Length: 284
Length: 197
Image (tube, rainbow over all chains, first blue to last red):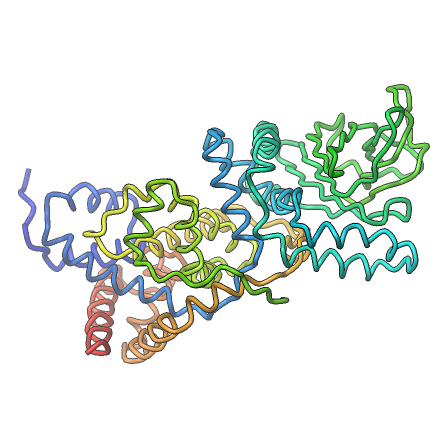
């Protein structure tokens, strides 16, 4: 086998430049990675190219960073420290439930937010204006970023472990459906995170009104054939803050459902179709 | 997008110290690095993937990797920013290639809209001065390159094309593309170094 030159030849330099730009074919990339540790002069030349490519990154037009990303990253770190298996986490909880975690971040709002939330029912009832609700929710978002993650860590870890088992598809197979609140529960909010590759979903609901022991929140899916064909796909069990998550493994393909609906029903498994007040609804 | 100021003050600690603290499990150090670099990482990812949602995923993954791999970071192999942006580049290009293999579905919901478009204003403050200076210098340097060299570099770096793919795309011999990249990067390095003096 020919001994490789200590100093980069023109050919090696061209490969190093391509390596720095991420433009090599896999076999060339492997060749460089294999030989770099034994050739300091190659590494030195590569470092020079890498300094340029790092500068190239700054050519991009500056973009505003979404605020929620910070919370999502810190939540992710929480999850990692909770020993959630990385691959499961990365495939599902991380990618598919970024918005879910952004919602969950708000389970323990700071005092000023709690005050707002106490005021919300009156405002909403008096005005019945969705815009008011949206404005208040926006205000909540302005302070949510520094919530106490520790308070919700256990719940999040459990949720992420559950969701990791069902949401394993790539990003192109996922979509998010925002659920709209009805007048029965104007403050309720929800999102449905669908992984069509796995035909599974996670429903996250917040600010659900308290219910009695003889009541439950039932999740339904209405078929695309229209009419009143509903499939009962689960029950939401909210915590004291009115937050609930449900892993959904529907009896049929999500594509065959047009709408998802959350209703308030009497306890029991014998209710075959929605009869109670609608709480949340969204088109799939 | 609406803007929200982050209450955390700018952190003056060096990158190396922050990375060291991250390797010891200090989340506040990670947040300080995030405040410092999130904007350039996100902007860079956006430039490559051209999709806010994907760029956000890249941003998040970059900092998760920072958290997990901080102890592996070797300062002798370059500075932290280079390391971070290299990760960003790799992840963003991976996303571009995945998308080329599998066209995106048209009904994907923009999560930015779904979860409201608040801006992390703190990242703007931290990033502003130094990054703006570097942006000007690299843009100025790029202008000095012959068009063919600039095109080869941009197709590789921002569009994720390999040397072979660029050769086919431009119908130019592969050797010529390799030479353009090497000469282009060398020239850029000279220009950047000259700009620092």
